[in-house]
Length: 318
Image (cartoon, rainbow, N blue to C red):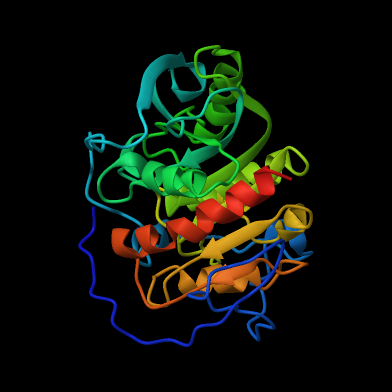
């Protein structure tokens, strides 16, 4: 994973509200002066601007992280159940998955589907760098309603249809969720789910949330979502072409989140901060938007997991 920064900048502690509480670390970005980027073909009468191939080779910084192939399970944490299935939506490849249920809990549980970052995998959220399952365990041990975490490996797909024929988003919706519902040993309910993702997976969680909508989606929490507001400047790993960007960008799609509780967390020095703030400015009602000192790092992502788990759990329990 990318090297961690020493985030030492002091920021004011504020409390913000939308569908519930966000911790005192968070700073609400409300009443933003920046307008949402316009000019997308779906939202404009103007002809789309032709994109020259050479421009697609010069990119803004994105979420390209060193590969993490097989992070170890945390000793003493909630047990991790793993498996795989052959995914037609991922080109027929063996697709691994992992599920964590809080220890000491029986019965059928709701589930939060976790969408991973680029160059990570289905186990990365459970690794020693993030340990979301241990954050969940502490939340449940404090007397809160339990839920499970479930992740599947979408490789570098970016959770939307790609030119190579793969579609990580369809894999989650059409294959992984039905598998979770039908696996009696997992004992999970998928009628009403939560979505969580970071970086590439943050974009993916937002995209799938928009497709499913409320009330199927109880809540979405994302960290540092990989969003690009400029249709002339995005990495080819995220979109295959200008038309692909137009079809799958979340700019102009904010109305889909009007009835879904949404928590966005992003460090103030993250490379996606400006685009994410611009996108959030188009949400009505506004999302809970939390920011504090930090970058596109595991240190920041881990620091905000407790409030994200609480946000997801509280909305799933409603």
